[in-house]
Image (tube, rainbow, N blue to C red; front, side, top):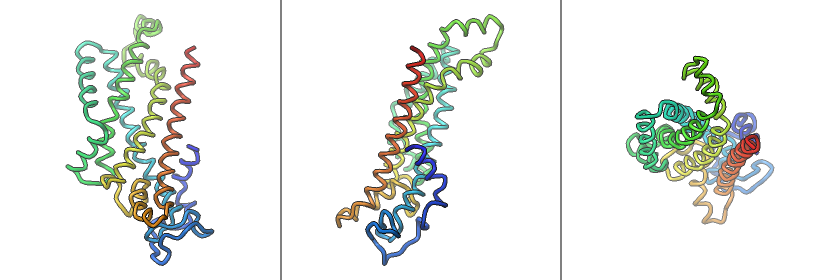
Length: 257
């Protein structure tokens, strides 16, 4: 399922039968047909095409959030665990402070300052997700430090930088990847929610959150697909990333046994 989602996003221009923003008011809220597999929205735009293009914005934002927050979290967590003392206290308190701001709230505050769009929410969520990764990395890095091989490399004269980059970080990466996959699903849902509320991606851009918002009015006319199709896509994507994260975690647990 996850592979299909990624392929849909990458090859949307080749797969989509129509321009996602092509308006045809004469074909407004058309039902499923050979020409329009999922029907059309209020503006007569093909829902299947918009769903495919929506996968692009739906994955790009979370990818940026998870990528940057994972890199920052690993850096903060490893430095805190390795250096200890006041460095550990400073970084740990900084992460605790960031925990006080929920991702959605921080994103809305950034939108209020910088305006609606993809950029402000993504930057806000990069900041908000960093302590989740940082705290996890700090915990497992401290456990890894207690293992004999770390002391062995120290005795051999290896620098802290070399030990961390060549051994410690690679050894904790699988656990971090498991958490990052789960974070990806959360970020996708939250960014879609922000777009639904009007704080994220703006219409007429094809985005799942925007599509759910636009699908509210057709619900009053008992036309379900404009809202149901993107909502289902969001749900399946979140579940898929959650399954991947749990699968990685299970493999790690089996390996440690």
